[in-house]
Image (cartoon, rainbow, N blue to C red):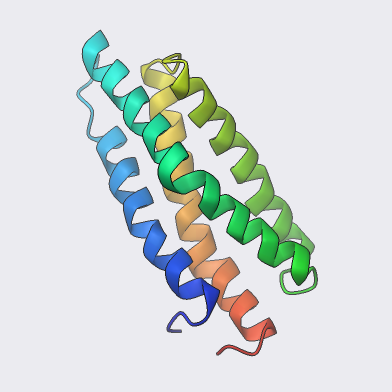
Length: 130
């Protein structure tokens, strides 16, 4: 289903999220400290410039249309937002080590796929946009 209304830009935002997740996954094993710090900084910058506002927009839609998404999907979406936001705040403090970075990147990629495949189509239909 093509994205319409507010879901068009939210879906476009996901491209940058997936690029970042792929970069995290592509880090060398036993990455040196400078690589880990650079990835922490990249995540922190992404949080400040895109991700925080993206999460706020999605959560505003859920607040405005609480019945647009089944509760189980709402909870998964919001739980992911909490975990990813906490990881981004840890990245701002340069405190994500390699396992934490990899887990954060995997969570981000899984989250985007869940939104694109499960949440957005249901929400769009509920709002009469598709």
